[in-house]
Image (tube, one colour):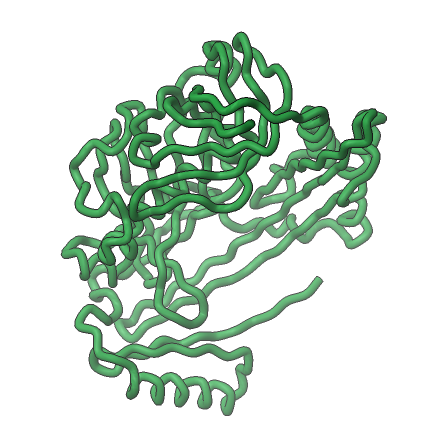
Length: 403
C-alpha cells in the first residue's frame, strides 16, 4: 500500500489569477507555495472573466452519495495478489488456444478531497475504488496471435465481478478475434460495442464543452435549441447519482453538482460549463468544473451517458443484413471543428443478422454531424464502467474502409 498527500492554491489578484501546489505541509513549505502563487499573479495577464463563483452559488449535496466503502482495503496483500492470479488463471484455463497472458491485475484505492475558498465555502468527501482485470493472448493454428481484455470496477469490493467471471469474459473476447481478415470497402450499418460507443459519446462531450464552444473550436457552437442528433438520442450528465464514478457533492469550484439534460430527443439543450466558460458565454454554470491541485479549472463529466433504448444488442444485430460490429478503435481521428471522422478499427463482420467472422485493419469514416443524426438504434445494455457510459448503438451511413 502507498499513500500521498498534496495541497494546491489558486489566488486572484484583481483579475489576474495564478496557482501552484506543494507536497510539503510544513509551515515553510506552505509559505513558499503561497508566495510563489502571489508572485505569479502579479505578472499574469488580466482576464475580466476570472474569479471564483459568487457566494450564493456555493454549496454541497447532502445525504449519502455512496462514494466510499472501507472494504476496498479489507483484503490482505496475499488475497489481492490471489484476485489477480484467479482472473488470469480463469482466462488461461478457458480454452487451449489461450496460450499466454499479459497478466491479471487487482487495484484498490481511496482518496479524500477538501476544497475551501475565501467566500467561506469548505467541503470534503471521500471516494473509494477497486478493479480486477485480465488480458489473455490467444494463438490460432496458423500461429497468428490476438489479445483482448475484460475488467470490472466498483466503489466497493462486494460489487466487483468475480475474478473467474472477468477471466472468462476476457478469454471469450480474445478468442473471437482469431482468424481476423480484411473486408472490401463498403457503406454499411455499423454497430458499436458499449465500450467503444463511449468514444462517440465523448466526442459529443468535447463538442458541447464550454471551452471548445467559446473558442469557436466546436461544430456544435451556436447550436443550442437545434436538432443535432436523431430523435431517439437523449444525453444526460448527472453528477448526483449515488455510487457513480463521476459523482461528487460539489464540483471543482465548490458548486453543488446537478443533473443536466444535454440532448433531449435529438435537440441540444445545454452545453457543459464551469464558472469561467459560463461567464464567457453569458450562461449559468452546469457545475462541471474539474481541477487538479494547480492550474485553471477545466470541464469534466459527472456521470455522462446516453439513455438506453428497449432493444437488446442481439435484436439490433439481427436486423442487419451486412454490416460491422466494432469492438476496438485505434488512434484518434475526429476533427471537432469540421466534424470529420476517421478511425482505425477492428471487430466482427455481420452477415445475415449474425456475427460471422472477425475483421481487422479497417477504418470507419464519416462526419460527426451526420453520425449523430444517423444513430438509428440504441440498445438496452447501458452499464457504467467509468464516468462515461453508453449502450450498444447502431449508426447508418458510414464508410468501412478495407481492401
